Amino acid sequence: MDAGIEEHLAAGRHARAFDLLVPAFQDRVFRLAYSILRDRAAAEDAAQETFVRVWKALPRFDGRAALGTWIYAITRNTCLMELRRRRPTVSFDDPESTEAMHAAADIATGPAGDPERDNLLRLVDTLPRNQQEAVRLFYLEDRSYEAVAEQLGMPLGTVKNLLHRARKRLMELAGPVEVKAA
Image (cartoon, rainbow, N blue to C red; front, side, top):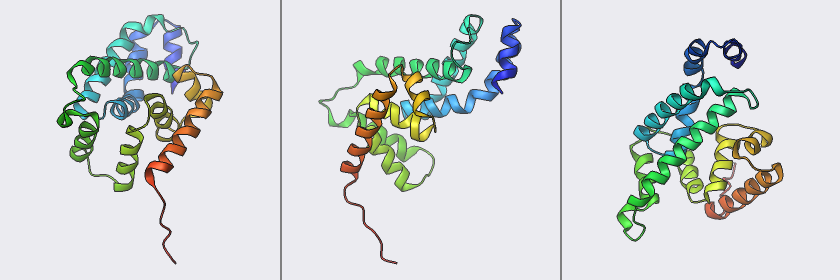
């Protein structure tokens, strides 16, 4: 999929490459934006903004990173800018506006899903930001350790350590697991 797009880019046919790129990446961009922002409307806006940024930057794409990695980085940065933009309006002194309340509201109003998965996502949201990102990439986006390290701009050992600490913390948060008798 990326090879055909990259051929158009190498030939300077940026508009054609973009026409192929959007349908190939729109679902992944939206899912990633939603996993970071936890709000459907904000994720849709971030996905649209991501593709505007990709369009503007496409002539400068140099192929040093895989096309998907490059688009992922733009998506992630777009979402992080949105989170930073929101930050001043959130009061952590007001229990009505804590991030946990927002996450719970988004899950409650989102599409019906598996309750265990929803619970796990809530637990992931309690982790430090760098652990959340590593867990989402590795487990939810099914990326390799190396891809996670490249996308987060961290050494491989740091990513493995983040995932280890995240798993340990998630097990503590989840508590003892009940085993049903057969």
